[in-house]
Image (cartoon, rainbow, N blue to C red; front, side):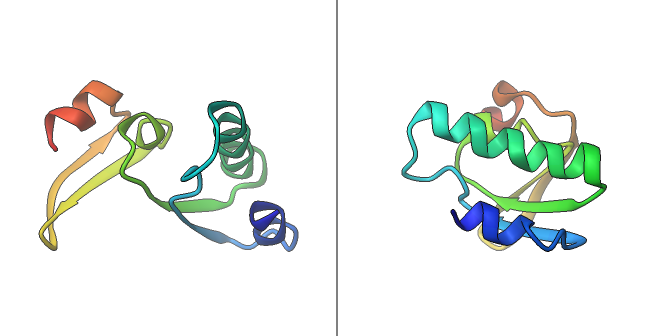
Length: 86
């Protein structure tokens, strides 16, 4: 429901803090699909915070922050690449 509320007005930027936290895998996939659609079809930008490397790898760009500093900035990262930086 929170995802629907965030997207209904089609804002230019969507901030998603742990959008798949506490969701089962099917619902997580649906949420990620909706966010991906917002980017691909509607030209929206999504800024997503997650601790899940698989979720992060859905993004076009992954920025890994550790202790307040940028540790890595990757385009097209795989889950394994993200995990290797943790």
